[in-house]
Image 1 (cartoon, helix red, strand yellow):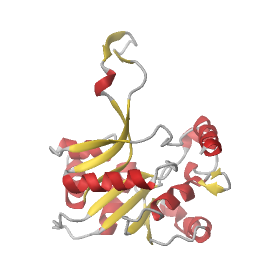
Image 2: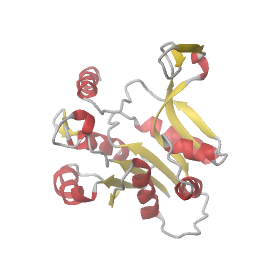
Image 3: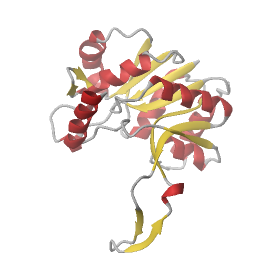
Length: 233
């Protein structure tokens, strides 16, 4: 079984808008709708779990899903206080057995506000995760990188050849990513992404070339960039 968890529990504070960012319109369709369509078209995905704020469950069912005509099995899951909590809720919605150990199941975790992910990149992450502990999309750093101190003084210039910018989707063997989340939860650790939780318990995560178009829409400027990407796609 290959499951996709689409995390769409954000409040959209940086958008400075009454509407949550995942529901804002992009070319006549909610941003989340574009993301779901990409995963629905991926032949390797068996089911899609959409994690949204608890208060938005009915809205998503009637205003988002009803208009998309998705073909995959869809499940709505109530989100948590933080992104990491929301992902964990999605993991429990796939399998709630405490002793789950099947190593064949794969879970793909993706930000609901990254609407430009391509099916072939989703498949690349899934196939790589079957061979190792996990795989994520990313792009190599293209600007000069500086390490600075607390007073904003440059301490060193980093070698950008070894630095990548992480994206989603991120794919893992289900039993491993669940173990990573539960270990982080029991120790009060919050990671910057799901891969960091797997790295923390000694897992090996491969990075795969993504795309500079695979942006995460969090600000008004990002939305303008998204509209420009659609115009040239």
